[in-house]
Length: 233
Image 1 (tube, rainbow, N blue to C red):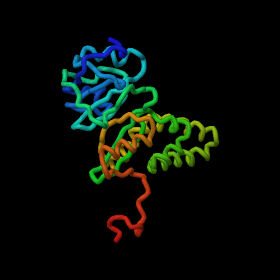
Image 2: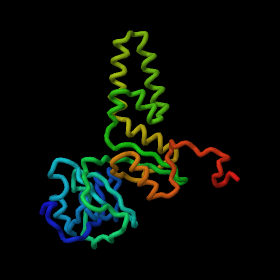
Image 3: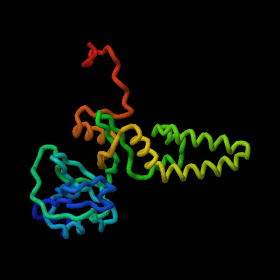
Image 4: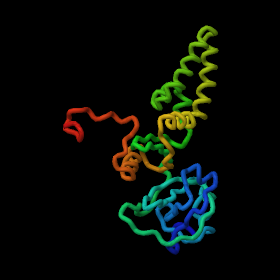
């Protein structure tokens, strides 16, 4: 079956995610209701024909406790699936074809008080090209101090030594950047809230606020007092 053929409408329920499913934030009980915006049959064996063979990720439309989101996956092997009932057509459900090539997976961490932060799931190219800029942008102050220390240590040995140390640091921050970011946010009290595919960071923030009204981006400016906001009277 191809995407141009209309399958019997149904869903697939994830009984238990494997490491690939966990890597994109899936949990037991999550329900797959569409692939690239198109309906799916309640048949786990048919999923391999919709996800993976084209060489690029597919946009999986999933539902959890009435909340719907999209995540990219380049494999159907995300765990054990079982047939499920047709999805309920809600106004917030994505409508029409979804083009995965314009989307990017983002990791979301959120605290109980509503603070949240996000980072792209892909390795940060800026960390390889311009490590200090990426560290500043990510607000990883400890790692930035390590980078500065390497510069200072290399200066007495000459600029070739500085260049070599910076190359080593760039590769390290490129490969370890997401883990460093995650560890920093966990230390601030944030916890994993899943992975969401979005076309831009702006669209991602809008989606998070729809999911969690009152959520506040960790780095958003705090509202000024005395502007007639609640609690300032």
